[in-house]
Length: 399
Image 1 (cartoon, rainbow, N blue to C red):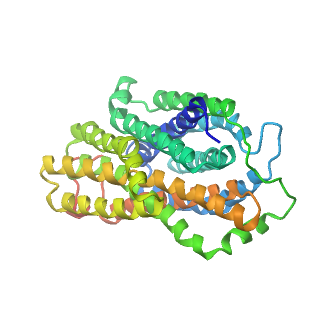
Image 2 (image 1 turned 120 degrees about the vertical axis):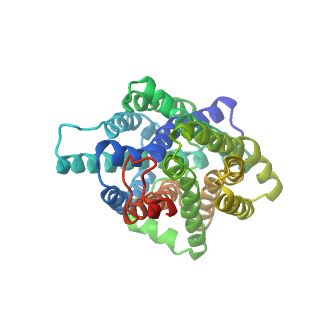
Image 3 (image 1 turned 180 degrees about the vertical axis):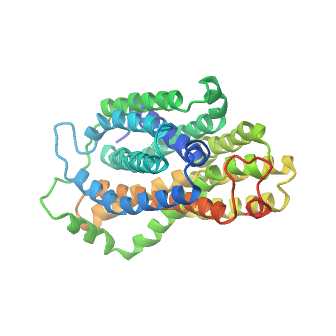
């Protein structure tokens, strides 16, 4: 069934709402925790690791709960009502610097808010992925929706990564007003998606143990490589943004170039999602082939940047090309999510949209955690000094 433009647009705007928050957190939260709140990079890295361990438990459970949800509004759409509001509130609290607290109290505060953020992000992103196969079974329509959502995702990263420093300065150095704006936009976006989508293609809800769903899924070993791809794609996408601010601020010692460099990277991602991804899908037909080719080319671009990146022109050009080619990976994996949902429904006769989407979300978070925790662990081991622009030890710069 073809979807109206309004419904397709709502899926895209829904991506804009959650991805503005995600991009803001992914790009600036590490530095906020270490440089402003004053939490050690060792603890922050440990926090990211522990929170992902908790996700290993709650993500699949959340997915199976959603698969068993039964309301007059549908199975996945009800999650687009109250939870975006809670996400907006927790997002604001995440960027509050509790200056009046002791170090231990700050650690507890940071841990609670970050883990709460991760759980709410799961509750929103899981049904956002799960609802599309329930709305339409047409692959071309799904790919159009994914491409549109990917474009809004790239736009989110462009806004959050490029203009954050200027907007934070505008708000007197505080991240809170900006996060509040992003949170409100997220609420509006998800409410719009709730109003325009309708679930049509789902198997009836059955009473069965949660582990029964997981057994049905994990007995298909051919899905394991796909799950690994979900993780690796997130690692590559997260590395583009998580390391960029540190690289420009400390390796180049040019904090004045952060906005410019992040703008180049973000525009490259926007071109990747909006312009190149539909072309690549048309050429290679499947998400698997598209991923293999684009990631190979991305590796070559970053190799050039690694050896010749001290030249700013070379750095800018190769960074743009790398993100223009590679950023679509985070959207191409959503094509694999829909394929997996269809495969399980065909093979097992059950709708595990939520469970599969939650596992994809968990794999994505694992990839992000490996990147964030890895960066922080390397910085801690190399003697990184928070805020010391131009005074970092050589070991840190090499890292």
